[in-house]
Length: 113
Length: 115
Image (cartoon, rainbow over all chains, first blue to last red; front, top):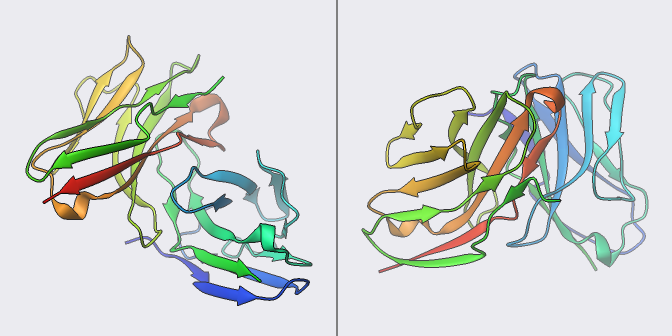
């Protein structure tokens, strides 16, 4: 059973609002990731982190920002939500090593009106 | 160039039949891992099976097996005796030794199991 959590699970919000999507894991993993995914489509990596105080942008440009102040916590923030941000956001974590799978949180489905 | 290619955007299979989902990959690393994930309509990603580049035997996990053909760089997922609950998106992924911080995903295959 993967111990990675995301809140909220669903969020409907108006344009221009600031939002933070929470992601926490209790497995002590150094590497954490945020993916954006439209329904039935491929995953796009938007941010990742190697460990505390390290963050990197992913392959897909995103207006969101992330922080990693604690190993277990990797929140994603949108300063001003827009309808184009409507999507599912998946958080994941893993240990180092090419033979370890990623563990995924349940996802946050964001709708910006 | 795509590193993970899943050529079947969608598949329809009769219940209880076996199904093969294709995945080809491209890497210059000698050490790498291949993963399959299932994503039901609820949205969560479920890890199914893993195959390491040095594994000589095909991985199996219950009804799931991985048909690993290293020379062809293919890692097809085989689901035996399909069930209605197998209807989902399936993603093939790779993790390379030299870039183990990144996991590369294919675009996925949507599998529909027909009653």
